[in-house]
Structure formats: C-alpha cells, structure tokens
Amino acid sequence: MAQTDRSRVVRSALLGLLLSLWVALVWGWVLRTGLWGWDVYPLIAAGRVEGLGGVGATFGEELMDGRYPLGRYWRPLVHLSFGLDHALWGLDPRGYHLTDLALLGASVLALAAVARRWLSERAALAAAVVFGGNLVHEDVLAVPARRADSLALLFTLLALLALLGRGARGRWLAAVAVAAALAAKESGAIAVLVASGAAFALAEGTGRERWSGAVRTAWPCWLAFALTFALRTWALGGLGGSREAQVSAAWSDALASFARYFPAAFAPTQARLLGSAALSGAIGLALVALFVALARREARRTLLPLALWFVALASLTAISRAERGWYELPFVAINGLFAAALLEHALARGGAARMLVLPALAWALASIYPWRAASPEVLAAGESARVYLGQVESVVRAASPGSAVRAPGLPLEQRDPRPWLDGRERTFAVLAPYSVAAFVELAFPARAVRVVPPAAPSLPTADEVVLVLER
Image (cartoon, rainbow, N blue to C red):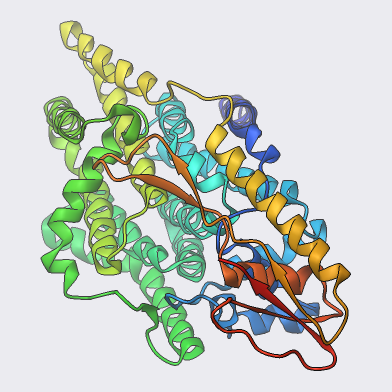
C-alpha cells in the first residue's frame, strides 16, 4: 500500500473513532431511558425468532404480527433487530437503546463517508457534525419503535455510498442496500430514487449519454427494489399501508408538505427551538442561493440528487397523511450533505470570496448547539411507563387462574412544553392497551392473560386471567 493511501486510511479511521466517541458523548444519556412508546412491546413480542427458520419466516410476516391498529406494514429488518435485542437483553431497556445508539453512529459514519467520497475529507467532518448533533435524534433514540426510520436512512446512505464507488461491485452493493432500506420501512423506497439521482448527476457527457450512463449504473437498484416490493406485496396480500394514506396526496399535498419540512430541515437546530418557520425557511433559501453562487456549474452535481431526495420524501410524507417530528430524520441527513457541499465550495473559492465561508460555518456550528445533557420529558415518559408496567406485573403475578383483575388507568401521554414548528402541541405517546397486552405476553410467557378495556369485560376461562385496564 502506498504511503498516501496508508495515511488516508489512518485519517479515516481516526475520524471514525472521534465521531463515534462524539456521538456517544452527546447522546449516551438515552441509555438511562426506560422502554416506552405504544409500539415498543408489540415489536419485541413480534420480533422473537427461534432458529434460522424463524429468520426466514420473518420476511413473510406483517408488522407486529398484525397487532398495529392503524394500518398494515412489512418491516422484517425491524423484527429481526428486535428479535436479536430480545435474545441478548430480554426486556432490559439499555440493550435496545444501545442498538439505536449504534445505528446512529453507523449513520453518522456512513454520511461522513458519502461526503468524503463525493466532496472531500473536510466536507465529511462538516456533514457528520451537522447531522449527528441535530436534536431530531432525541425523538428517534428515546423510542426504539422508531428504529425503522434509522434503519431506512442507514441503508439509503449505504446505497448512495456504494454507488459513488462506481464499478460493477458498487452497483450490486447499492442494490442490496436499496432492498434493505425498503425492508426496513416504506420510506426506504426513497433509496432507489436517491441512487438513480446520484447516478445521473455524476454521469458525464451529453444529456443522452448521461441518461444511458445512469440507466447502466442504477438498473440493479431498480431490480432489487422491484423484487423486494413484490415480496412485500406477497407478505401483506396487497399494498398495505396506512388506512389514511392517499396516493393522490402526492400531487395535491406534496407542495404543502415540502413547505412544512423545508424550514425544519434547514433550521440551525431542531426546528422547534428556532421557533419560526418563516425565519427558518428564509435561512434555507438564502443558503441555497449562496450555494448556487459559489458552486455555479458544479451545483447540479450536488443539488440535483439532494433536491430529488427532498421532493420524494415530501411526496411520500404527503401520501401517508401523517407528519411526525422524527420524520425529519432523513431531511436532516440531506441538510448535512448540503452543509458539507456549501462549506467545501466556499473554502475552494479564492480571494475575498472565501469570506463567504463565515456565514456557512456559523450556520453549521449552530446546527449542533444547544446540546442538552438529557431530556427531562423523555426521562419522565420512560419512568412513567416503568412504574405503570411494574404495577401491572404485580397485579398479574398475584392473580390466580380463572380470575378477573384490574389495573390502574394507562399513562397515555407525556406532554412537552416545546411545540412543533407550526405551533402544535408536542406529546410523547407512553403506553396503549395493545402495548400492555404485548408486555404481559413477554413478562408471563407461560400464563394465559387476556387484556381487555373496561368497556368490554368478559368472564375468564378456568386457566386464564382477565386483566381489565381502567380508564
């Protein structure tokens, strides 16, 4: 190995180590958080596997084995990750949070590698810092059920990274990552568009030559997407999805969704801390204009795939008819790559034009401030779930077969004083009846316990316990 190659490998390894330590330092507090969120325990219960046959069967199962009340989904990689966590940690919250922390670290490193291959080593650091420090991760890391978003983004980044490597091997590695992104979450379908956009932007020659080059590069990704989507359709017996989803919303509501997520993506910190959608949107537009002025002809190679990624995400969000704070996660990754490109082109300019790096650098640094040692609202939600489930466990353990027992009312939500960017109240969903039922199944695998709401009481059979959840 040449000396320059060896030094490059050493620098990359040191950067990876520093970024991993930084992620652990900023977000390590989530390891103190309990297991909460409506979907956590149903995912653990559905994710359990026994042997290699169980791993294969996971790809034919519906999300949560059909427990989810708001739609039908297929996310086998999420099931497998929860199955592994349960095998290693049981119901210990720290193990699940450790997995999510590792996924964040992997995404930060993948984003840095994309920026390094696309732009430069200094751009890699900028992209990783802007992405890894954003407070959107608080909404993702605290609730393991949101792991699907982390997995989909990680494999999207890996698909982009493999495609940037070019060559036949990179194309097929990208195809595998595209399939994995879709197997993680429906929003992972974006990966094939991101890969195709990058293939077209990086192709050389005339317009026709670029199109043919992009097709040659991206066709394995589309093949992998088609096969995975076919497997998904077979497993669900149809398209599945949210009961409220509307394909027509991709055209009718996409612009409004774009307008709502654009300020959130380009806010110097998590959008709710900036507090103004208008100000955040103005900052984003100004930064895009500054980038076009700096990059000029090179702007197409960066803005085209990022813009396609952004528009596709906004359209998919519009189709789902649902907006959540943690849905900002992939938008923040786009923000990190854009920030890296902006800083790179600003530093590449000579003379007085290099002064333009100052506002870009100030914005990038503001993206990681302020940090919080821990979120009291998140810790309170985890503690609320822990105390309540401890009460449920005591009630069930003391119940004899053939009896009906009652548990106190559910802690449904934990409120946060910080609103969303549009002013809506922000709440944390703590527990729901179907999550309590899944917890009881996990905590008492040898007992027959049926969880029912107070409005639907029923007599227990001789060998079961009926647990009635009070209002």
